[in-house]
Length: 90
Image 1: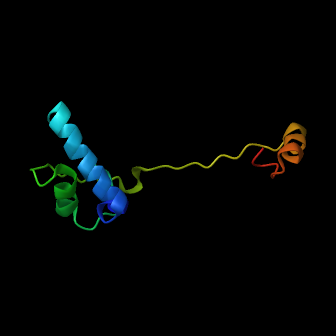
Image 2: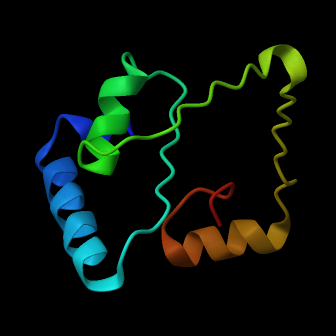
Image 3: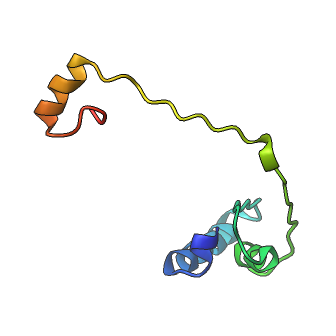
């Protein structure tokens, strides 16, 4: 959300959402951000100034991230030569 709130793409998104609301009627909008500075301001941005509920979820150390990398095979090496790329990408 924070990437859109202060950009041309964000302005276009807001206009598009308001046009959609005029055509389809009210609908739920959900904005997610881990680093937004002012949640209330972004809420107004997302809702066109109408009221909204802001929820803060503290995940703290409950998040577990695992990075997996496949083993490069001979087939990958051959394909990489054909595609002119690295074996890891192939």
